[in-house]
Length: 125
Image (tube, rainbow, N blue to C red; front, side):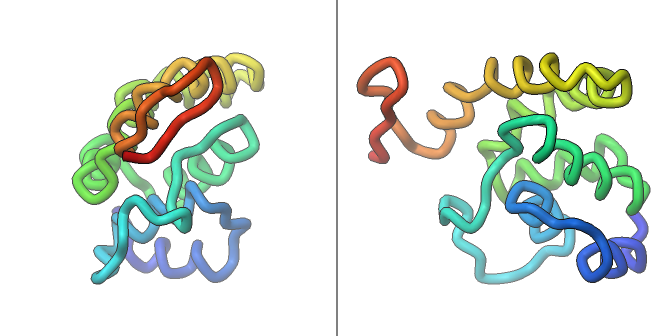
């Protein structure tokens, strides 16, 4: 990871909630609340595009991504399929990116401490 590039990225690139979440974890920002609504995973190709931009710009690798799940454990399902997401994104298969992310949604929500109460409804425990 290139820390100078990380600093440049946060000030000069398009940042969303999920890419900011990555940045906060990798820069080891203290005193964060991981389950806060200020942090999240990507939910669609647009969200993932900003995450992938950070990944490429700051020269991240899988070891860097694994650091994110230590701060935000609910990122693990996303990091586990990062290679598939990147391949789909690079190939402009944006619907596939969405499908992969949606296939991890329930696992992400459980790791966030929520319980599924109906098909599309979750309750925070």
